[in-house]
Length: 224
Image: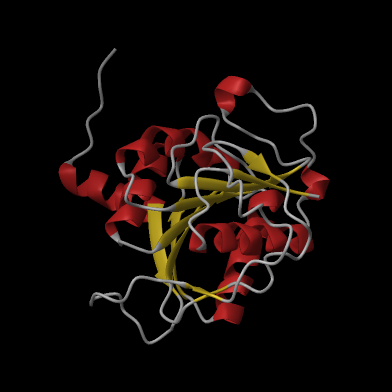
């Protein structure tokens, strides 16, 4: 069988077409350093027990709304990393975008259009040096599991899914019906696309970001 090699220019064009980057206007082009982000406000009772913080890879079930008092500080830089055209992923993407607009977050989006661009899309997101990368889409779970352990200084939040063995820099916000953990583990019997509602996705984003801003990372936040 003959191998077909693409010319370098053609390959570069394919990469550029597969990994799309867009941004929301915020007056911040990310070209200059900025202060380390901080949480504005505090977590409410029932998010975690301050006397017994969760262990790595633990699952917590915070009280509903206990994260509502936490907001990102001005200039918070976030990359929305997404792959997939299924309704569930679109719901998650819309939730992240809505949250960013409400919180005046500086948001850039990296979209992988082809399967062979999943890992390059993660690398591109990391290269942008954001305060947080939010992953949306089951297709990203296995690639994130491969990449995130090698970039422990970069914080990640996965919404609507989780990594099977996350490192301390990977937090997940999940719920019954959204328990995908990678192809090798198969789809959970409780997976239910109908649970991906705008309201639940919005809560996952806010609860997850609140945890990251309070240095409660490397855990799974389980929502009702």
